[in-house]
Amino acid sequence: MTVITRDHLADGREIIYFDETTPPERRHDHRPLDPRPPVGQARFDVEGGDWVAVAAHRQTRTYMPPADQCPLCPSTEERHSEIPDRYEVAVFENRFPSLGPDLGVLPERGEWGKIYPAYGRCEVITYTPKHEGSFGELSDDQAKLVVDAWTERTRELSGMEGIRQVFPFENRGKDIGVTLQHPHGQIYAYSYIPARAQRLAEESLRFFQNNGGTETLLANTLKKEREDGSRIIQTGEHFTSYVPFAAHWPLEAHLVPHRHVRDFTDLSDAERAELALMTRDLLARFDQLYDSPTPYIAAWMQAPLDERYRESSTFHLQVTSPRRAADKLKYLAGSEAAMSAFINDMLPERIAAMLRLDEKPLGA
Image (cartoon, rainbow, N blue to C red; front, side, top):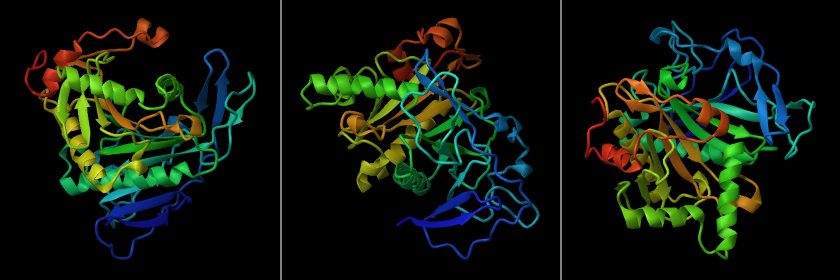
């Protein structure tokens, strides 16, 4: 059973520890920290129909510190970090948040020229106290503990005022834009539904309604992928990983449940246990392709908290990487960046063969 303990950092931010056993009394944070920045701005793009958060204070955030100054390693007597004590998994409010720390309700659509508070909450989740490594290298117990933390944070954040979408994710690698090397991810609790999540929710709802509310879009897609089989990576009792038929990225894989679940909180104990191991396996496969770690974004797609989407939107993981060869990256240029019209240099069937380790990737 996961043991959860809570504390606050010196500037008032919350920190939450997740451990397998009851820890000794925690050390507290006594650093002389500056006050937390005020809530940033949210501006509505009336032409694009989506929200933009403006967080100018993030310009001063920590960038690639040396290992002996890592803010995610446990504090010692000689060096104080963001995490005051030993830990197995820790979650804390981001010192440089894109959203929050204030909570509140935003309208579905804003007005041109009006500045709104960027309500919400941004958290950092550290997978391990070890500075080196990755999610793909975690032990069974450590991977399961991270999934437990994602579950509990989803549960709590979903109940906070004004929150409409909870999004756990990991940016991995300097080529993705990571500013800290320590194995970690983030959890964003949005006061609006982000544009891509909105589009996915609308497509899923349309399919669900057109099929009499008897089958979700993702369940139908999974059925077709399993029948075809050419893009399947791994099948478990509760989940299947595959490369989607219309993959956008040179490396892309989805991990999808066999039954309809809306978010982490809907999973059974057995499903969470398998999910932890299959997530670790999938991310490890990305790293086994080349002699150096593969940059990726691991995005947990959960149903928006609006009731109209809850029964049609299915929880799943999307992992994408711009790496198209050992020494080449795909950049979002004109077609992708300006028009969101993706052009993939890789056949999805070959991506799947590479991730099954049936074929060697280009330049490996």
